[in-house]
Length: 338
Image (cartoon, one colour):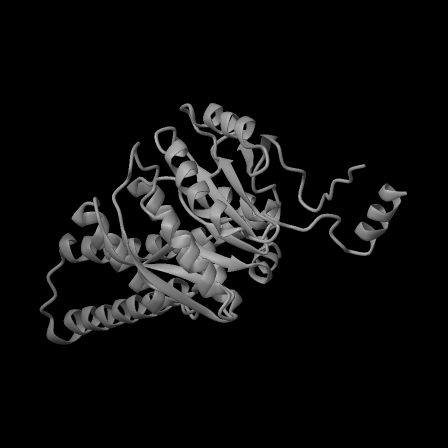
């Protein structure tokens, strides 16, 4: 009986059908203007490659408010053999959307790419070929960034270098999430339960052989970026707090330094009052001291609070995302046919 044979294979850990050679994970948030062109370019690239087991495209709709979901449903209808989709109940964030795609990806290799067409799909064959030279991760490093403001370029450059200096993990600079990773790395990422995801740091932490290819990043093809400065700041905090305890150490050292300064000021005040008798009472020095000490304390409490908030999120163990609809089976589910 075929169904019994497939069931025994599942129980033995054997996949009943060969998985695709390549899965492409695409997070979607208000990308109505770019989905069609991205799909066209991806299929034009991947179809001629004749990959063993084929390929699939996993689009993750992260609570889009435009016409992105209807476009995805149309793609599924026209190309059910290759197009998969997940749609969240609300917006959970870019990193969570990528994580959801990785949770469902069955490919022997997985590409992560955004839908804004700033990262060229045409680089995927080169990334795939490089992966098969014995690497587990091949990330795309930006040689230049077109169509972005000088302020955004500067903040991105500064952030990556500060993060690299603060963390004990070698996180490559001038890179985003555009990369290809092997099945080993995908399975390792699934073992990381953090609520505040910083995938490029997690992938670096995993290790294995990693390399890069350089490319010139184009400007956004259409629509408006979902990465506001507020979201970028939260993303930066997630990266720093996930891979560095330097801010906590700075707060501790700063506390000792300020306490030492306050002790010296106290000694000087006593000396002026009882030895030189040149003590002039006044509120300016008092107010400056109070405000300075209070500011340092608030900064230290804020830093500690950021770490505690992330610990609290992990302790609560809420699901990372809620799937509203999908044409993919739940993670770990292997459908039987026949």
